[in-house]
Image 1: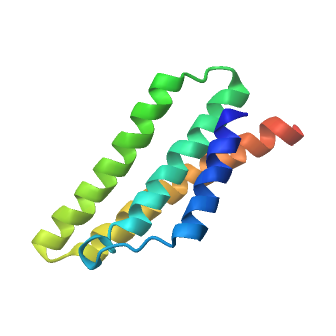
Image 2 (image 1 turned 60 degrees about the vertical axis):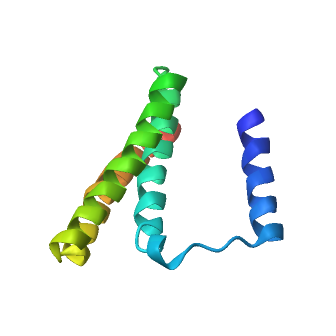
Length: 110
């Protein structure tokens, strides 16, 4: 329940304050969001399977975002930022869809 309230408070603050992202960080934001979504769906799957661990979730969340951002940064420095960004999105997308499929099977027994 606290997580839901925190999510609602974060959305309201985001709408009211209308934060901006510096130009230098804009390439990393979409990748960070996809990495965070991967951790969230993985955590939801673990919760439904009864193996959720809050410490592991926080570590997974932070490490996913940092590793994905580092890969995009490295790609920018090597001059192949677009290709590595696409690779990160594809890999995390596959993980997200796998977790969503497992959640769907668990909830709907289908």
